[in-house]
Length: 412
Image (cartoon, rainbow, N blue to C red; front, side, top):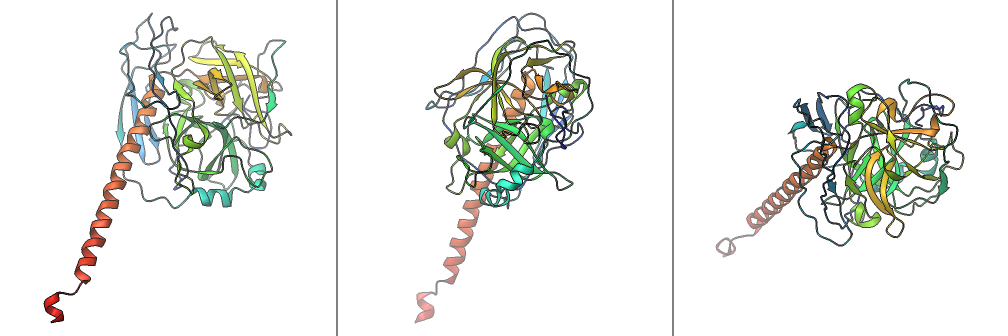
């Protein structure tokens, strides 16, 4: 279901060893919501352990290590989310491990980041309709041919929804590429979720509800400021279970955060391998000439021999890596609970002539919740540092101004 940069049918692939870099950008807005936590039981057991290595978000590295402890039976589903208009509450973490957990413990290396020079205004100027149209999916690693059933539903084209859009960037070889990403609720309203292998490079920007060929996008063009992903994520082996990433979106020209403008989906742990979901993504123009969003309502199942989900639906070509798998989609709010993203094994799908029909997703467990915590807490730390820097600057200017005022005695 993913594809290659040249438009051929390959997975939503990527380089397993690549590390997300901070993109010196600023872009959007904040959104309302509340955090709900729920427990569920009966989730399947983990298929294999993971010795997760450092995770990087811009200048922040997260390291997870397998504690080798696994418990059968009861699994806990955690929801980091919100209903619009409600205040956020602390995220609760349960002691028992679910089927998607490696039992990870983590630590974060944090370094202060410089003031961004890449803003949403810059992103809008750089990402013209022509550049967006030329962007291709990242290259994907070779994989096994698709093994599909005779019949599968076909994704339908539609106008999209505000919380899902296209993530554009320029790679190290100056090639533009794109993936799909979605806004997830966060305390600061500035977080998006995509596949870890999308690995955006320089000049990264997010375009919610992208509309092909339009000079003005309905919800604007937002600069990406920073990113968080596991450094040892990959598209094969244990690393494929970590093929997800978060990115920080800078405010727009009016100072708004993106969730304030688009709304956001709830981040949730995957409740089981079998789920009813709505999957929304943006296929590459080279594979899908309509160049519009696609949506498929389908049922997931376990990808045999892995801790991954799979779904069958025609039309998920290259560019759909990072597409959210939404459970409980509400057509009124046009949001749902994100329990997966296209990615994982082989970059999110098999090889072959029918690879657009089959898509994979990592099983969301404690690893993604931990990464979410790191991203949001680092933001709080950065905001606090920014406030201190601003206050120090004001104090310095005030002090300087006082020295410039002549003494009354001197005037005399």
